[in-house]
Length: 98
Image: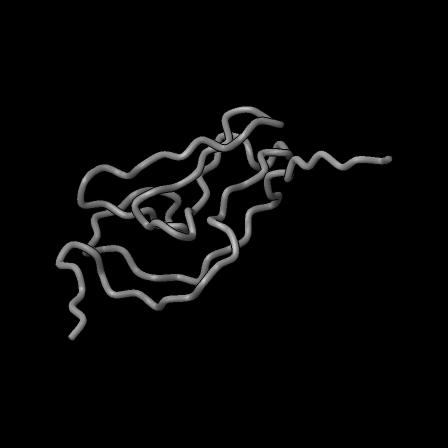
């Protein structure tokens, strides 16, 4: 028998191919918080255009609310479908042209 953790609300599970990290490529992403699709206790922040997003954690007993754009007490948190960030990190690949 599966039991839900006492400190996290039960949520709809949907698998996502990525964790929601933004690419921090456009000005509209700067100094904004973005939901971490895999961990409701964390969110992403773009500090500087063209750099990787910084992972931040909510204070204890709080989860990140994408609707409110901030961390809220877990009892006030509600599941919402995640929204894709404006850009995604570029995948660095070394491709040989030989």
